[in-house]
Image (cartoon, one colour):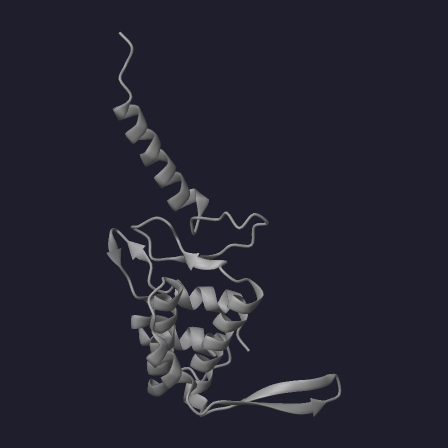
Length: 169
């Protein structure tokens, strides 16, 4: 099963570079590499289609836009079946191989939402398309990275305040 790091990698596969949105998964080779690293088929056209659909739906959902029909389509007919093993009970997905990784991506999102509600969110920089998983105790994380987005926005606010403040004569 995919973990929250794999989920963030998928959600953050559409960064902004030089002011333009990039799609790292537009390159089939890059997407196939990611799929293979996470137990997918890697190289399957249908797997790519399902993964892109899941990623796009989860990005919209994490941003506050409802995409229920897409998620229902991804999860349609999927079953999670328990199987006894030496360490205990293991859960296995019953789904077509080309759809399995997309289903796991949705399940990773559901797991994060259950364990850490409200902690997965988009960066507050309006020019950024990345997401963060806030693990801070106070749940006060606002930016994907303090080095980039956080510092930029703080510097802009400071400059705006200094421009608005009249200079003493």
